[in-house]
Length: 311
Picture 1 (spheres, rainbow, N blue to C red):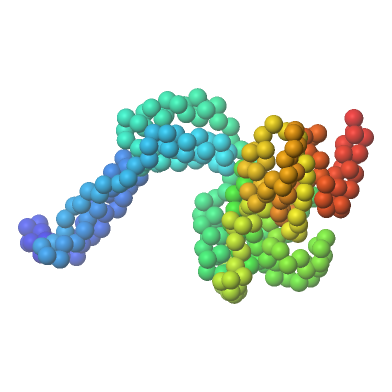
Picture 2 (picture 1 turned 135 degrees about the horizontal axis):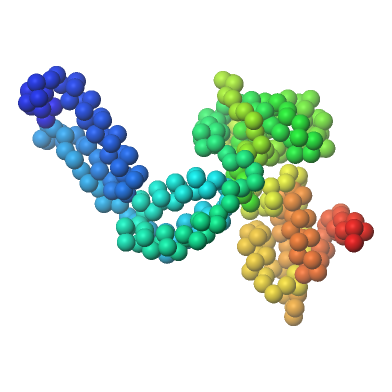
């Protein structure tokens, strides 16, 4: 009871309230370190505060190990960042006995972990972008282009945030029409893809934009159709697969379906977005033959000829 505590310690009630706030902050820090959730809660019936320890559902040992392995495999963060994140996950999600077992399993992989070659994304910038998407706030970014390393300034309407193949990406619509007209496809209606680690600065402009809920960018659908985060247009493709594991193909193309299956070959149709699909198709070598559309067939032939010329 605040009043009773104030009289006991010969201070005013505001001092007791500050103490309660300090204890709450301390317990929050301890939760991150030890994984035990304790809170100071007000009890109306008793007209006072009590310390409450909450039971939290924990991951199984296998789930905890899987989560740690996925984080290590992502190679999205520095070794220092990964070590901190792993400790927080293990403290919060598994018992102390299980924590030591999992640490033994990942210790060698963590010891040999190399920092990614690309610059890591600042978590504050990541959150700023996420909030700008939610609040529909226009951003000003300074971005280093991949081809000529030139740094350009863009005013963009952020619509999506994604992670793929080691990198975080911002999906955004450029507000400057003159810039969009200079693109390979003038006034491309689809969002431009920006890698967050190549952004030199991100600022909120204070301006707002509006996208109806029904027209909002859907990261889940986009990710199911996109390979290697290359921009472009949506298209339907068909190809024959001669490899040993059609399941691996269907995992890579969640929207794909097997339309015909004969001995040694599967005919597959898939809806894809952008030009990145060519990189995957080429990576399969003779296990894949594109059959449609004809434009993609010709592009594959030309690229294979260029590859052959280098050898």
